[in-house]
Image (tube, rainbow, N blue to C red; front, side):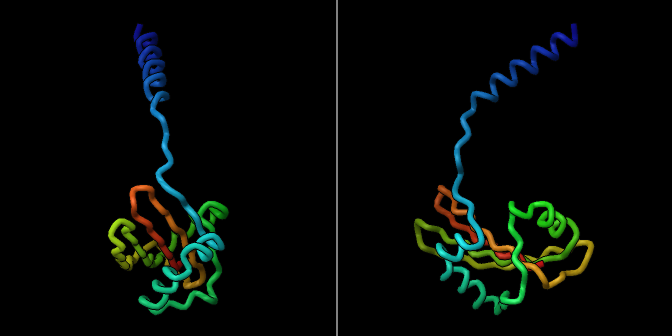
Length: 128
């Protein structure tokens, strides 16, 4: 009886949750697309935090996901965040340091943008 009840609950929950429509929250882009769309914003980040990423190797968020995950899980890194509130035009730039088990390599950079439909565009540059 318990197995039948469990099966019934599982079946009903799958029906209920499968009816929830999934909506796209925004656009995600990186590398060449990001440089084409937001080169001015990236230059502002580089200037504000006095960064030189010309000698760093780029890492793709999805295209090199296993390597990306290894860097995030094991190494220290610094994140530089540029946030644009599209409705007001206000810009916020902050830096965050994440301490990992291994020291920062200063060898890799990952730059991604999430342009949310809610009106906030966030560009994140991480130096590993």
